[in-house]
Amino acid sequence: MGEANAYLALKLSLELYRKPPAALGDAEKQRLNGAVLRQAEIERRILATPEAASVVLPASSTRQRLDEIRGRYESRQEFLADLERSGCDEAALDAALARDLRVEAVLDRIARNAPPVSDTDIEIFYLIHGERFKRPERRTLRHILVTINEELPGSERPAARARIEDIRRRLLAAPGDFAAEALKHSECPTAVAGGNLGTLGRGHLFPAVEIAAFALDPGRISAVVESPVGFHLLLCDAVEAEGVVGIEAVRARIREHLEGTRRGEVQKTWIRGLFRRA
Image (cartoon, one colour):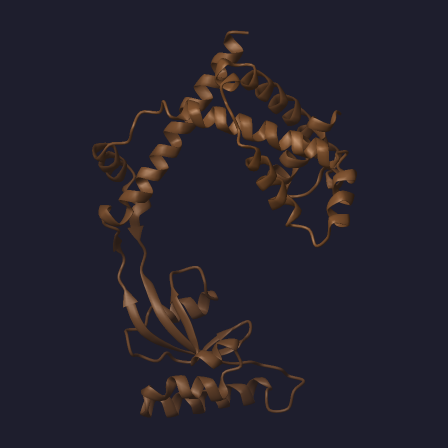
């Protein structure tokens, strides 16, 4: 494998598998080799086009990207050693980065042919994909946790249960003391924030805790709830009802999505044409 393909193998391996080629299994290496050959051929054809011939890259662009890569390493020695392990050196990396930037510049130029996204396009997308814009119910919650530890005196199950029941009795008489009680007695890191769990949707809590939390009205304190980590008391500070996010709140995000999709489609069509003309 040449130095250019060695760099391409490293880049694709990190993108596809989040690890260097040397750490891949046999099946992964085989798939990677196929991807490298396909990508190398695509890049060869792109760089042979008239569009590529007219691309002029500022000298600083390659240097800037090379500096970004060097900056990921604690020392120059570590950087060079990693290059050597990848079958590459600094000069080959510089050339490969210049090649990358030229390919990106050509594809960016081709993507300018994508049809513009209109307000009507955005509104149609919003209507067709309404499910994406539903806002689930969320709750702003606090909790107090008392853990169970049968080997620690005072934290055995009956003692832990008695402690949290005492806390609950005090809170039923003075609900405004929840944050103070959490700070004094909760055995969760959230104690320093008055037991604040933040604003959460479903799927973030232990099942029993979630059931109790989403049954609470604002300002109400739960019964004692048991989870695998111990006993909980919950306070619901606020409820955000489920609903639909208005189009104005997502208009810019939809536009960005549609523009990216159209740019990608134009680029793919153009690349397929390079192979048909061969």
